[in-house]
Length: 334
Image 1 (tube, rainbow, N blue to C red):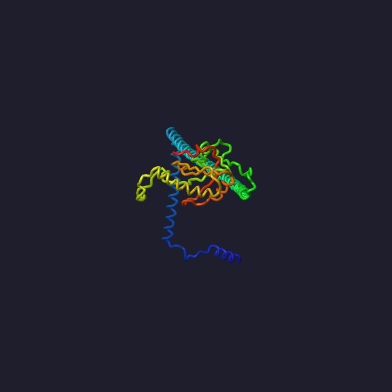
Image 2: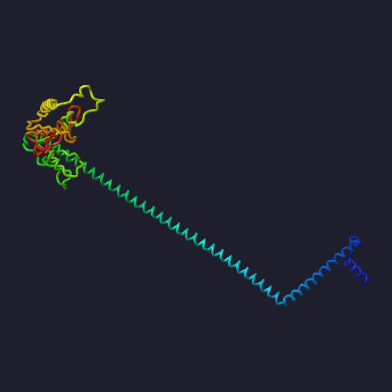
């Protein structure tokens, strides 16, 4: 019984599928393949052994040892050259990187410096603009203050003048109306203005012009107008048929007599006249000025208030007071 069980177990373990086993030809082919493989392996082992023996034999030869040493030296030289080339390339890259970094730092520092300079200039401009605006504001305030002060002084002066003009009991004008206004008190007087009450530079003159607020003499600028005082003849294209005739001193005298009679009749309405003088000068800032001297300041003030701003011969009159010392220098004619 035990033998039967053991045989059954062995049958299960070593059970083959004989239907799937290769045929005789296939087994022979497989066997030859294994044989060829074993022969190749054997030949390879023998070849390796022969090569090893030959290598050992060559190692014992001095020439081969020298050749090996030379090959090792060449390999070492090649390795060192490659290592040196790699190091050179790395150093070159590091140098280029350092140069680039340095240039970047320089550019960045330059950019920061330019930015700081721009910001500094902007701050300075803002400061200058603020200072300029502050100065302009103060100037405007000063101008407003001066204008208000001048307006108040003018109103007070006009009130005083009206009071003096309308109050016959006041024989002499108030002292504050006899003041002298000065353009540049710190400078020396303008000699030409002091002599003639005119100056070719006008308000641009750097010397001092002294003008009285009230005087017995009034000055009417460019009151008398005549073509002989113009200093130039009109263009022939625009001249009339009679203007080609040459004017003479007799014509000037005749026209002036007519002007004199007309003007004196008008200015005598305000008081007794002591002098009526006209500047016969061809210079633009002198020609045609008329000085009228009254016996007192009240008459001159009355003439000033009535003539200022009026029109004569289509021209608006500009009247002011004068403090001439002598007539000789004021009415010089050229």
